[in-house]
Image (cartoon, rainbow over all chains, first blue to last red; front, side, top):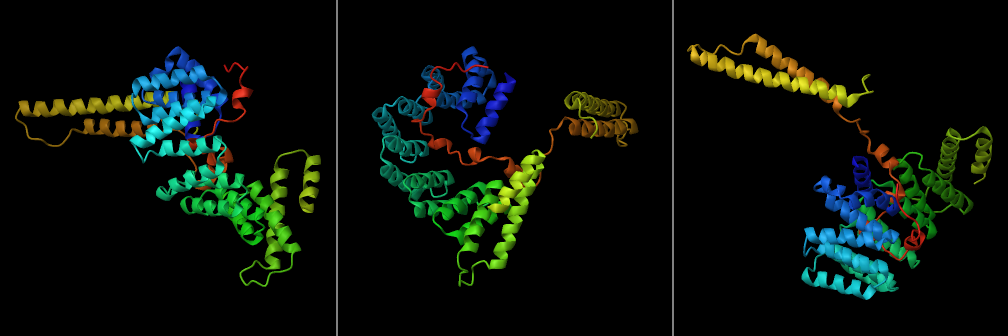
Length: 277
Length: 113
């Protein structure tokens, strides 16, 4: 039981979405009542298992968790949005909308309800309304990098790469040490065919996380594109020698990473393939 | 350190001894001071054996804590970040949407250990 509680806590910390694991660990805890031994953590576990149960389709378990939370925290907006999420999960979108609207009428600044409203609009099939709602939210809470990330994703779904790149820039202003955000920005730039800037961002990914394979591939793709096109007359552009040097470095690192694990036969194949990229 | 097979047990026992010594030396100090008060003596500082007992308890505590504590994390943020995956860094838990296949995939699956 202690093991299950620790694993659930790790999952809460890492924010990974693994609903089957959470339900598998949390359901016996909740059914047997052992969850109450966790004191303050018990309510976090209830919330976590409720959301996971909605993901997995176990509405009975979700209802049980939400009822336990409502008994402990009556009138709480945080518990009420779980009700809204339950309606969203079963497809009753109008009831969910009513719940979120009620929460926001009581408290205009409620962040959780505003975010759920955005996702509800997207679930209803109104992506442009979802985008406007999220933009309105971010006008007020511009330091919420999660919101900017979500806006970037919404724009990417609509294939609006310029706006998505802008959102990623906002994210990078708030969280500049995170290599995954640089990677996402780099890939959006590559899609926009802005190879110079994409190369810089891919290099930043490697700087922040040594030997990140996806970043190394990005570097190889960018350098191969830039070497094929005519040299730019722009003074700030990377010179051809630098491009070749970066390309060589990326190739070496990729071969090193792939040779570290794997049989001799795969080593030679992967080496040949990387050199042809 | 070499003693990593049973870190918590030995460490906990050592911490317990350290605490007992600390408690004992504190109690001895109290008794010593009340004895001095009873015979109207002047306070000439703590007797040597109580001091030694106190220092020993500090040493034992130090040893015990080192054995009981968890492994260190790396100082460079780079190594911690390298272990994180896109799934955990790009997750936006407040923005979950529920119109996905999960409900159908797990419909007839009984999730248990």
